[in-house]
Amino acid sequence: MKLGFFTACLPELSLEDLAKWASENHFSALEAACWPRGEGANRKYAGTCHIDCDSIDEKEAGRIKALMDKFNLEISSLGYYPNHLDPDPVNREFYHGHLKKIMKAAKLLGCPLVGTFAGRNPGKSLDDNLEDFKNVFSGFLEEAEKLDVKLMIENCPMMFDGYPGTNFAYSPELWDLMFSLLNSDRLGLNFDPSHLFWQGIDYLQAAREFSSKIFHAHAKDAEFLTDVLNCVGIYGKGWWRYRMPGQGSINWGRLISVLYEAGFDRVLSIEHEDPVWEGSVEKIQQGLALGRKTLAQYIA
Image (cartoon, rainbow, N blue to C red):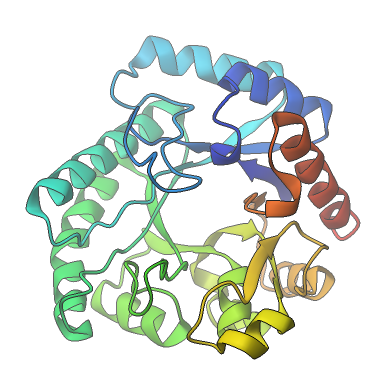
C-alpha cells in the first residue's frame, strides 16, 4: 500500500512543484486533478487542472512520466468529478466529452485509473437515474475497455443543497444496484470512509463487503459538531465537517487493517478538505504532512 494525495487542494502549484514537495515529504503517489481549465471553479476543491487533458499528446505524456520518475512517484489516478447525469444536456455533453479525454490521457500516461462521480438528476426518481446511469456509463466502459483503463466512482452524496444531491452512489445499497446494472471489472470505487461516517454507515463493514471493488481509497476524516447538531438536527447544515486523517473519528488503524486483509495493495490518497488546515499553500501542505504522519504508522 502506498500513500499519496489528491492535488485538487493546491491549484496554485504546478505539477512540477507538487511532485518535488511530495517527494521531499515522503509521499509515493499523486492523484492528479484534471478539470478542464476554468470549468468547475464555482465549487470548492473543483476546477483544478494539473494535467491538461485537452492538449496532452505523447510528447507531453513522456515529459510527465519522466517528471514522476525523477521524483520516484506514480500517478495513482486522474480525477474529474462532475454530474454526469446533469439535467442540462449541454452540461452533460461537455462533462462526458471531457471524461473521455481524461481516459485517453490515462492511457498515454500509463495510469490505470480514472476517478469520477456517477451523477444524479435530482428531478428524477432513483429508478430513472439508475437507467440513465446504465446508458451513460455503458458507453464510458466501452471506451475504458478499448483504452485498458478503469473507472471508479467516489461515494460523496454531493448534498450541498439538500437531499437527494447530485451523486446517487453514496451507500452500499446503491453500490449493489450500480454494480448489478453494470457488472464490469472496469467499474469500481474510489472508497471514501468520511462520507459513510457522517451518514451513520459502518465504513469497516462496507470496506469488507466491497473490497473487490475498491480500486483506490481516499483518506479523509470527519467529525461531528455536536453543538450544531443539537441545534439544527440531521436535516440542517454545518453539523459535521471533513478533517485530516487523525483529526476526526475514523479509526485508520482498523480500516487499513481491513484493506490489508482484503489484499488491497494500491494507493491510499489524502483528500484535503479540512477547513482547519487551509488558507495558504503552506498551511495546506502542513495539513497533508500531518495526515501522512498519522497514516504512515499503519503502512507496512
